[in-house]
Each structure stands twice: as structure tokens, then as C-alpha cells.
Length: 234
Image (cartoon, rainbow, N blue to C red; front, side, top):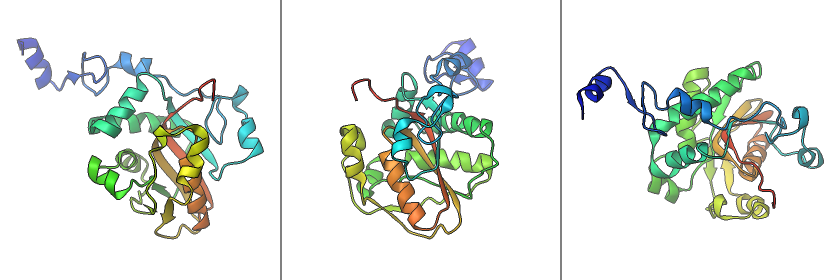
């Protein structure tokens, strides 16, 4: 390591996770600017892009169990690489910046409807043992500290193991997670935010919202780091 590199380390510089340039943060300013930010004109229920932010036709015809969704990024390069690194390769240092992007979006939309509680989709016992952590819980902890909202890490249990959603076609995902979750507590009268890394079809989050509302919640919103856009052929 050269003299300049050592000096930058001593001053708190590090390598940008994406481009490798020296930066005081996990990502340099240029890489942050290049991230595929989710636009402002999204369906308020499912967070997919719509003209003027109107409710999309799918949500109008069959409203999901959740009441709203906020996403920070589009699930595309390089955001998809970052989420995958956190989720599958234990790049836990990315939890803080990813949660930060999501927190910024939450703040821009206002916290007048601040949730009473945050929860996360639970992993199966086998998957948790394999990874050693729940990536959504890592995100929620940062958001909980930022907004002063408690995180109920074990409010949901996975009572049926399922095929990973990423391996399934969109029309198979709702069936895959049906009956997979159970509430371990009551949510009577509470507004609940479900924190997750990626929202693809929304099937998992819809199933969770139905379970949480059945346990007494009055409002369930999704706070997700990245929203996947439908493939043109889907």
C-alpha cells in the first residue's frame, strides 16, 4: 500500500463498494448518483410506475392486503448487485447505506402516518442457519434507530418452508407463500411497516399483510429497498 493510500485510510477513507475509488462512505457520490432511483410517479399501493402516480389497474381490480408501498430504488444494475451482495454474500456493510436510501424516501413522503411497529419477513430456520442473519432485519434495525420506531423481530413466524420466490414464475408466487406465515403476537389497532429488501410481484408482502391484519393491524405498509419492474413478456 502506497503512502497516499495509507494516509487516506488514516483519515477515514475507504474504497467505494461499487467502483473502488476512495471515499469516506461505503459508496462514492458518483455511484450514489448513478443508482436507479425509484421515480415519484408510482402506484401508491404497489409502487410500480404509473402515469401521474395513479393507482394501477391491477390494484384497482384486485386491491392487495397492504395499504401502501414505498421503494427507494429500481431493482436494476447496480442496485440489484448490492442487494444480492447483502442477501447472499453477507456484505453487511451495505445494510446501512441501503437503509439510508430507503429512509430518505420515507422522509420525503412524510412521517405523518408513522408506523407504530416495524416487522420483517421471517426466514425459514434452515435458511437463517445457512446465512446467519436476516437481511431485512438488518435494514429494519437501521430504520428503527433513525425513526425511533420499534422493530419486532419475531412478530412473524414462517410455519411452512417454501421454494425461494426467485426461482418461481410470477403467477406461481402467491400460491407458494399461501399459509407460509403466522403472527406470534397481536397487532390490535397498530399501523405496521413491513421492511424488505426487494419487492417483485408483491406476493410475499401481500400474504404477510393479510396475516398481520387478521391479527388486528389497522394499516400495513411496505418499505422496500428495491422494486422490481415487470418484464415486458410477463
